[in-house]
Length: 346
Image (tube, rainbow, N blue to C red; front, side):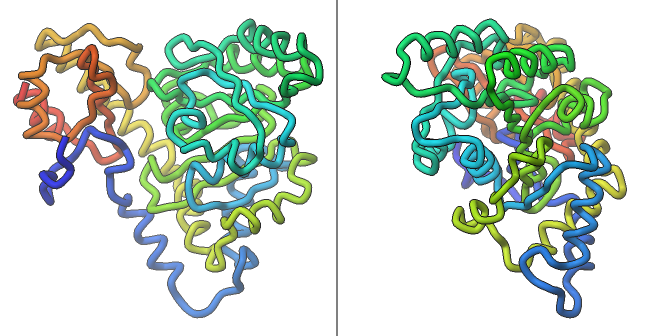
């Protein structure tokens, strides 16, 4: 895929990061750009954004805004880990495949990878990884955290019951549960549940709360649902280069996002577009998908000829070159015409 070929009006299926900023979010940024406001999160917008997130996730939540998802994941885990400890995660996890070793670089701790089923980990695999380490005593790293992604890297979702079972295993083994929620809005929309029902109500300790993949310009949040774990995080945030002086420009986006319930609107639009895309692919004979289509991802095998032709029309990535597995990602602004344009190119 040649990114230079993207036209001004063309929508991509390469990633939801390709999408622009939602108009309501852009308006919120413009509205925030008046007068002078206190810096480093002492402004009224930041306080309002924190209050709105607490309404969604629980009054006890401690909220810290950062620039991007890698920072949210890495600093959240830094707050939970010592260098002789480790984090258990599926081998599909973003923190081990696409964050250039940031967790280990920042914490000194290892990531212990398990197998995955459609991007998900199971309580049994967590216990297996834990016991394997414990067997070696102080010669091996000590597991301290389990990190999962909701929705997963394959667009699949953990049901609330699955999350509760993972949390129960974590508690039994004395482990913290971290959720990479860069697409948690898509998961909640797909499950038709509140954000709390897949986080605070099922025992999640720390959440990396996304935004950029769902219509924001920039900004994510580290949310400690177990507030005791947030002790001294302000120092970690500053040392980790993530304390924005003009914090209100991250906060303003989250205010609009939650105050107007835009998170749900955008996620539903992306998910619905993905279902239309999957239906269109099926109608044209491409109905064998490698993973269940549950949020805004479709993984479908295409021939070299079809790939070359389709990528001329719409940018997208080949996830696995060996089997020609394409990853198609819809966004909050994907329209029916964009889907029809892609399907016509097949």
